[in-house]
Length: 435
Image (tube, rainbow, N blue to C red; front, top):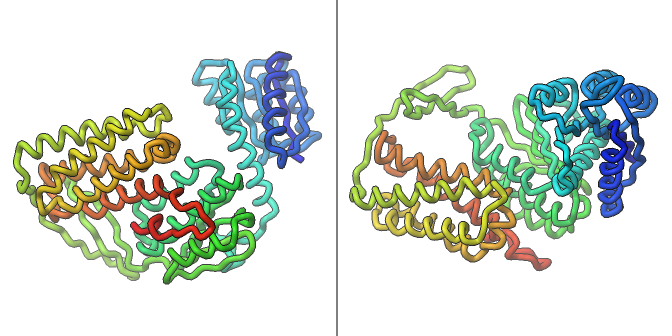
C-alpha cells in the first residue's frame, strides 16, 4: 500500500487533491493507498518523521514553516520519498529553490485536472520502479551478478518514454556499441515496450556497461504472451547473445574495441579510429560542393523543405490537426518528385515518397502518436535540412553522404505508424522491423 501526504494550509486545496487522487486510484484498482493531510510544514515534517511516505504533495507558501524548508528537512530524513511542489507562486526563483531542496516536480495552481491525472500515472510508475529497485541488490541483467557503475534506466509508462529510449540509442551516436546488434536490440525492445503499454503494463528498460559489454534488459513483461516475445526475438536477434526468464529479457552486446570517434574540424566531420593502444590515426577527407541539380529545382526543393521543417517541428506540440499532417505528406511528395529526377538523390526521393504514403494511410495514428513522434520528426527534419546545406553549399565527402541516415529515419517514422497493422495472434513482424 502506498502512503501519500497532502500538505497545504487551504482546506479546499487539500480536498481537491484528495478527490483527484481517490478518483485516479478508483480507476486503477491495482493501486492501493493511504492518504494523510497536514496544514503546514511543521506538521508535515513531524508526520514524515513517524511515517515513511511514498509521495508528498507540498504547498510552498504556508504559516509556521514554508514548503521549501519542510521539503529540505523531509529530504534529509528520507531520500526515497517523491515530493511534488504544488503552488500558485509565480516567482521562478522560489520554484527553483524548492526543486533544489528536494522536490522532484512542480505543479502550478489552479490545478489542471487533466495534467494532474496524466502526471499521476508517471509518479506511480516511478514509485513502483523505485520500490522494486530498493530490494534489488544485484545487477539488472540475466548474464552477471556484478553491479556496474554505469547504469541508465528508462521507466516506460507512456509513448514518450519509449521515444526517449529510441532517440537515445538510435538517433545519437553510440560508437562503442555494435551497429546491427544495437539496431536490432532497440527495435525489439521498442516493440515489446509498446506491447506492454497496450496491456497497461509499466515495463522498465535498463542499460548497464562493463569494460567488455553493454547489457540491455527489459523487465515487467510477464503478462505479454510468450508467442509474441518469441516472434520478436526470432525476427531481430540473429547473432545477438540474449537470455530470458518469466519477467525479463537481457541482451549482451560486445563493446566495439575499434570504435569511431567523431571530431569536428572547420564544420567538416572527420573520423578517427582508436585502437586498443589508444593510438589515434586521423584520416582527413576532402570535401566537395555538388551541383548536379538544376538551380531552379534546387531552389524549389529548398522551399518545400523549409515548409516541411515548420510542420515537423509542430508534431511534438500535441496540437497538430489532419490538415497539417496532410500538408506534411504533400511536402514530402513534392521534395520526392524533385529528388527522384536525379540519380544522385534518387534513394532519398524514394524514401520520402514511401513515408508520404505511410503517413496518408495512417493519418489518425500520426495525430494520436504525435507526442511520441515529435523528437523523431525533429531529428529527421534537421537531417534533411543539413543534407541540402552540406551537399549543395558547404561541402561533403561524398555525394551520398547522408542518404542512409535520411532514408533510415524516414523508415523509422513509417514503421512506428504501421506498427499496429498486424494485430492478430500470429503477428507477422516482417514489415515492422524491415528497415
